[in-house]
Image (tube, rainbow, N blue to C red; front, top):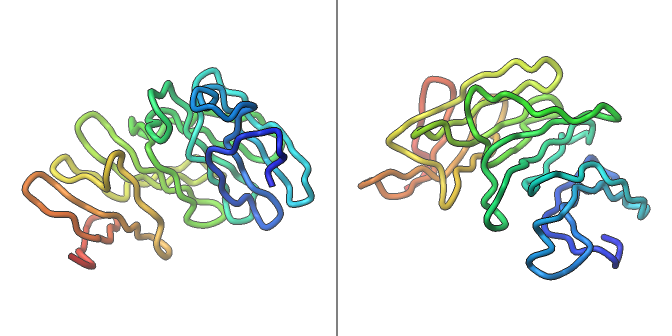
Length: 189
């Protein structure tokens, strides 16, 4: 995988039998700007899931493969997507989700129904959890004096309610922290 005729830019598991792939027809760096989101089965079957008007990245699927999410935005370079998060299930059309004003930079599934969204809201970095079935959202953490990780904020789900990220701020060296609604705890310096 993938078929020889495409250039794979990003990939993520989509359940146990398929992968999500951000891919283009050409292999040149400029081909990324017209990449599409594909679902490629381990049997070689290929389905085009999304042909965006702009650029697409950060594909991720719930562990059971039922729900998929990605970031779609006008991007200057690969890996610099920050804006709308899209969510789809089965054959239903994808829908852009309001994330409480957060412009998504990273997506990570906590389990088969909850998506952790990291991003920016004005001058704040924030992490929200989005319930795919109901649309209900919970703020996990947000702050204006710290950010999460290098170029764009990113966090990963840990356990049933926490997220982990490299946290840093002006005058504060990077450290690994665990965040839960209402608090943050340093795990390693």
